[in-house]
Image (cartoon, rainbow, N blue to C red; front, side, top):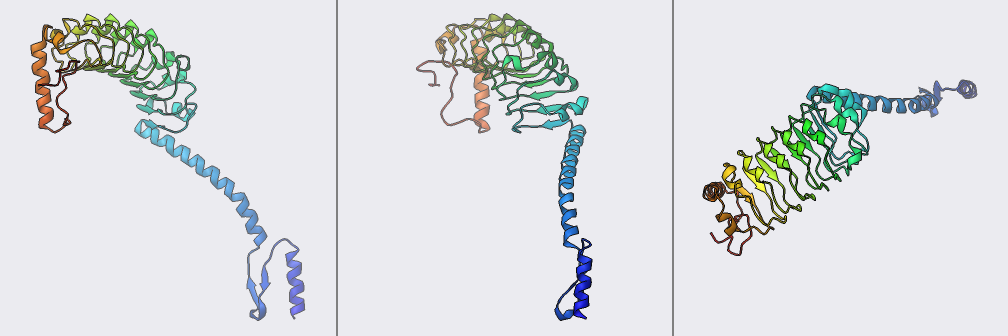
Length: 314
């Protein structure tokens, strides 16, 4: 009986699969073919992986389209993914900062409703940005290009008439085009840590400007047209080479309450002689008092913001 069973099992095995195995005295035990299972398993794994990746891409694309927000911060990217452009006009926010982009392509202009674009710290140089695409973004309100290798801005920057915030800090900019004066909705402008030797006279046309940071540049003077900025509250000019301060700025900038002139040749004594000092002095003291009241100041004392050996003695 046992011999016939073994012969039958051998014949079944030669067909490429097992139906039964003999297990001691317990008799016959039903069993799936290990060869068949292994073959199916090997074929199924790559298929499942591909399907999972495809499903992940579809889910990501659907989420981007639903929210209008694309965040690819610190993703190790060298190119802007095609999926970004597939979202198209649905995109409101694109954060692709802290990557290694080789180029900002002209196709960026296809994101016609883009409002906020962050391209910070991508080691971008002038020729890596296809400006014709970028400046076509008429809805753009926030543009961050800080911590790159830009040496100049094109005149077309003035076409971004909806801009409210422009961050160009920590680049190699030697000048700013006069067309920046066309940005009349601009509220925050950051140009610190560049190589600026002068500011364009048209900076005074940026009538909505609330905060401007020109610190750590090579400015020898600032234009008197800054006095046209009636809404500006914060003006950072520290660590430049300023030898004088325009007499009309304190009077014209009637909302100014924070003025940083550290690292220049302008002193507190110089400012006291400028028309509008008394009113400015009242505003900055009022702001300082409120900061102390709400506990947002340090314990080092009140710093007036210009160089003098008695500057902190108030």
